[in-house]
Image 1 (cartoon, rainbow, N blue to C red):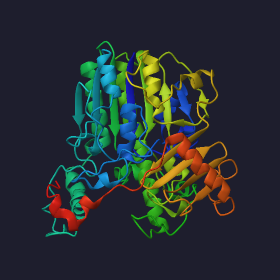
Image 2 (image 1 turned 90 degrees about the vertical axis):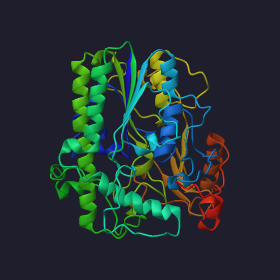
Image 3 (image 1 turned 60 degrees about the vertical axis):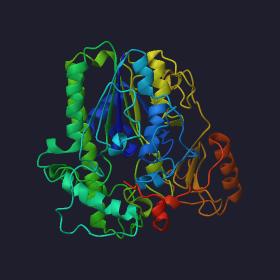
Image 4 (image 1 turned 180 degrees about the horizontal axis):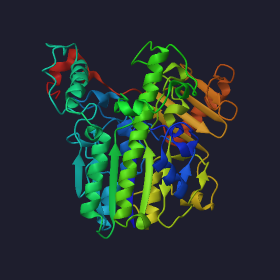
Length: 463
């Protein structure tokens, strides 16, 4: 059996037709869900991007980020758990390569290809589609509005260069085919043309879209009129760290941009599926689709994925598995699962055992109806924020108990609009105990002194 693992960054489950959305066009993902198993309550094991990729690669948990090590030269590494794979980790790609499968990785997510971060391990071939977001690809120094001279910190300078660099990366983006998602899918099609006739392969296709800034080709923005964008509730003013104080028109345009990127992804996924079928691979290939996390699009007064707060719009993810033998086809699984359970599920489908214990759980018993649940609760986190979900309660708060507790009745208040933490402090305390029982002891914030400009002389090698 072949395996294609599709990872799309920042993809909200409620923006797919099969998940109940009736205004965004996702025919190819809808087809995948119709022919496969759709998990309606899949959640992020840990956030954001790199934490999720570490878990996808190993099948092991990253939350509660107790192994975090601060490394000079990467401002994003200050986020808890944002770090390379450990040298001793067994990766899914290495396990499958050892088992005799040809392995390939194609993506435009810059963090997968940072030198020394180890995410290309176990892949017989890998292709990095350059130019997405924070990729340090093309120089930005020909822009007159880029600040010059010394900065207060390396992180400040890196942010300035990164923002201007993204503009430079996109100077030659004239047609839809020039955008990163189409380029990733076209590279995946070429890989299948080269390797589609081998005796078993594992291909990971990792796209950064629909990650912000949500700027698809203009023709996608006209697909979704304003009245459709108003269906989901939102609050003004937007209080997220970036950007702030958006108008209603700003919210509409960003929602249209996000929806447009979702549709652009689906369109090019359809082209990839066409090649899979033309190569005669549709009937012997396991196809999995998953995301690392979602994002706010105006809900709860926010227009980003990060804290404060970890609501359903961020933690819930789409997850679909299509078995070539139609195992569980058309089934909707409502059990609580993690997105990293895909690793154990892929290994089970191939009849391969992991050389080391993993935290993910095989989902096939849920797909076949043999089991109705595999977990009673889920836990996750993003920096200093922790999150909990069971069949009754959803909780999120900081590492400091009681500082900013948010408790919701998941049955009566699925949109999480009524915080019950002040009324039910005993429930918050009990939930925090369960988080430790399920995930392990929580850690204090990591030492970031090496990134302090005062101590810069001790760590001169910042690039």
